[in-house]
Image (cartoon, rainbow, N blue to C red; front, side):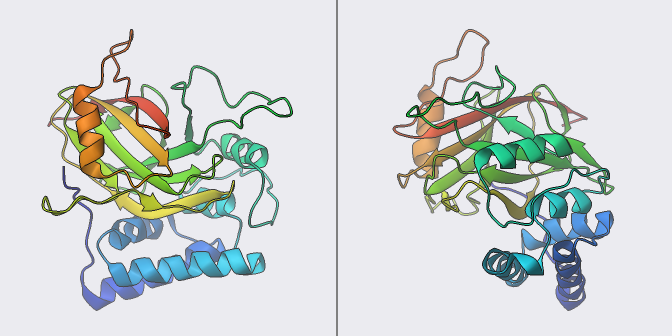
Length: 275
């Protein structure tokens, strides 16, 4: 289904958004301005490109911006952030440990959070799964809620994401499925039914990478299963929706979704508020 993402309100909104982007990368954002910025870039290609240029500059020269954990924490209005290294990229153990210490995100693994995090790996064994990091933005304020398994999600709010691409996959798809098997797309955006987009390209390293857009959907159901698909294939949205339609339910009544050669994360949420 097609997302409702907040669009810009002319040149004044773009100027305010770019000012908020500058503040975000300096580590001095106002939480309300941060919320408006993330909503605006969902519908403004020029401001999204401006944000992405800042990300590129920060990757080339880490000294020009705060590390991603600190930027996200301050932008979400959280205090008491743990010290993190100034390196632009770091190993998965450091990335996941810092994110957990900040209390920002749900870490969604292939086992649907049956363990608290990736277990230590013996030499020569497979790496832990890639991770999708999730946070919710309240609809009428700058309040941000930590998203965990079983979270009651305000159906009028927005979701934003970051990821840790431990498996070094090429693409990421993020979508939700309700109890009626209706599919709601976050990334890639699917705004024209004549199209069949594939997953968005992602960084092939083990750092924490944020996706700037905050996206809102209209939900009619009571429950959501939120998926992240890390994939090397050019799997399309129609491929995924076909797989959702035929996926069996597991012993807990959740979709047991599979896609060839993909790592799939899953998080179960409930919705609050009137449809």
